[in-house]
Image 1 (cartoon, one colour):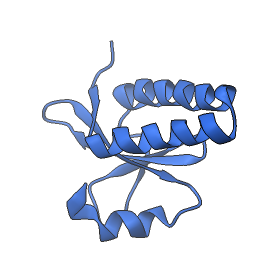
Image 2 (tube, one colour):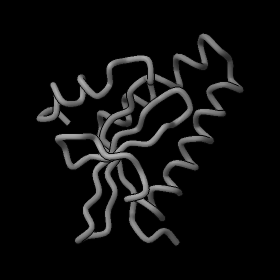
Image 3 (cartoon, one colour):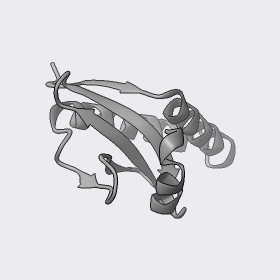
Image 4 (cartoon, helix red, strand yellow):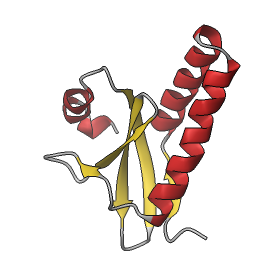
Length: 105
């Protein structure tokens, strides 16, 4: 059983859905399945070791690579909960996008 519960925002869910849909349409079912497998592994890792990841300067958020994406999440140690906030493609300027829209997460 993970030490922290892991949840997600609607924005993260939408980001993940868009990434899986794109892969399914453009790269095939095996690529979409790999992304979902990587997502399952990410949930497991951040549930066990949420603080062992890079931090996003100027925010309380952390990030981890997820295939060719960056998963940004928040950790609430008092209630032992991780919240997946956004999923950005690595090639995007994800830090700038995150900082520009930090109030929208």
